Image 1 (cartoon, helix red, strand yellow):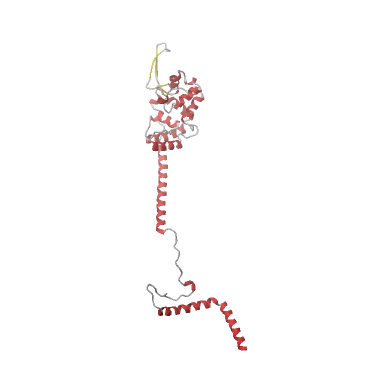
Image 2 (cartoon, rainbow, N blue to C red):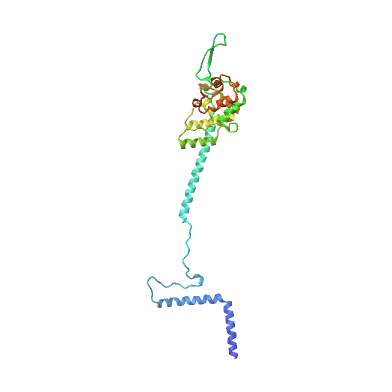
Length: 289
């Protein structure tokens, strides 16, 4: 009975020690099993395509694992190639912006407001009898009479602004949105739509003469910016009204008022001023009969 109780005590003590030092026991058991594995494997018949594991395993963590999951990330070379292409695209874009800024600065600094064209200032010449009042006739390269716009009613100029350039009093000589829209329509439809402001038209007719090429329009735009900074809006509008062609061989608002209504421009009514402003885009086609 004594020995039976002692063995029971020894068993309990061993179990307590085993639980306390379980990692140590487990490691030694695995090591012993690994040492026996090569000998047991050598005694087994080898199958085709199979080889026994080599090398002892020190712990369960070093046992062969299952197939690892492959990553879905792109290879490093592919990612590097994409980054290189992106850098090239951004570099080219930045170079184009810098070139555009440089071109704008060069064109702006080298553009000067020239003297008005003689053709734009040409007026008709009237010959009178010796009494000084009875006209014999008029001779002119252009039928134009330059007047002071201070005598004109405000609605004459307002009608032209509403018809040709509603942003005239707020823009800086050009309208980028209008230019982009006209350029897009010209490329897609093959037509020639204008996006010029009153200041641009004034620059073309008063200083440059008629321009149709894109290079000429570019120079016209820079000149318009310069004019908008150097001249008052009222001066620009008055010179424009004295220069614009309005059909029936009439250049300028005064000649047009006489050609259409037989009166001076200062005597035009609101409806008459609106009619003259409305035919500016195509005076030869829209001339009323």
